[in-house]
Length: 145
Ligand SMILES: [Fe+2]
Ligand SMILES: [Fe+2]
Image (cartoon, rainbow, N blue to C red; front, side, top):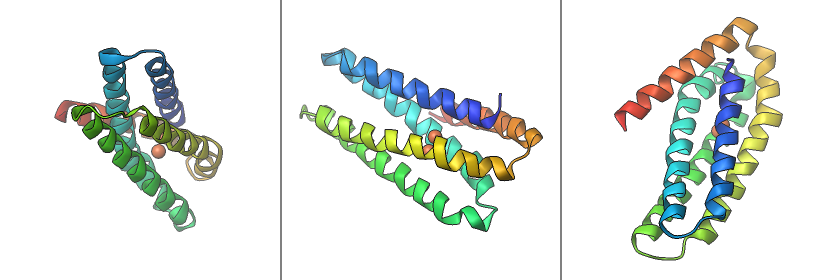
């Protein structure tokens, strides 16, 4: 699979987990949130290491990539905020909804703006190579826990 295929699989997985989270409650809902958090962090970190770093070699994409990094940061901060609300027994669904709005916006920008730009500079062989690297990086990060 190409890097784009793999990134899109992850994006769709998180959206699906979120839909499931909304129809559950209590402990199950918390477990689903934790799955979302794990998925998002693994995805974002591997995406930064493999995909963003590769694109950053091109000056023309600098500001777009910087923008993407800051969106990751915002989502990560919200994920941490949710975790601390859960552990102190506070209501957290409101901020989870905000987090998902930010994430959906970010995913849409990646798929509709960043990928088309990337396709101009990544050739067919590299698409697959970066896909392999992305998969490896995710496994590596998952092992580290
Ligand atoms: Fe992504
Ligand atoms: Fe991203």
